[in-house]
Image (cartoon, rainbow, N blue to C red):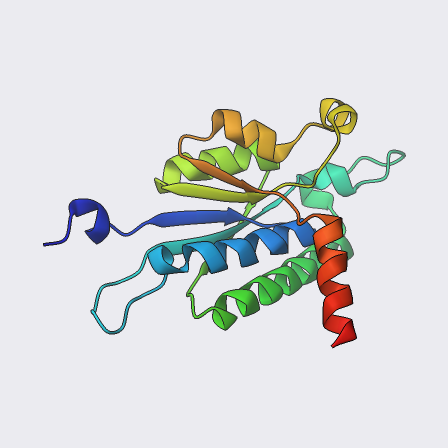
Length: 180
């Protein structure tokens, strides 16, 4: 007899941006959470729900300091470029998911990423938030802030922060692969 936990669909939200660490977090989640988020065709049980969330900062971040544009007067070229970059980001992210045989939905929201991610977690009743870590040092994190650090303290669900792979293990793996 299945427990209630096993029957419940796990809702996983992966916050993505254009950084390599973000894509590493997606791959890590696919490799380690595949059993709880992918459908099981043999048993007929549905898998969990995986959502890839990308947050656009407000347009003010794209504006030169000399000129101030209201959101309605943002040049079309800026809007088009942002849409193209988001489409490319999701194309790459969804290829990772398809390669691991996991279905995912995408969601784009606008605002301050740390606040928007925490709001989405609460509104969507997410069971687990997965987010990459840029690996900022203590000084940079103090001045720039850290989305993952903020979410760890404010998200209303468990959060998994995926750190980037160590350089030494990556370069060793590359050296081993190239010597074969």
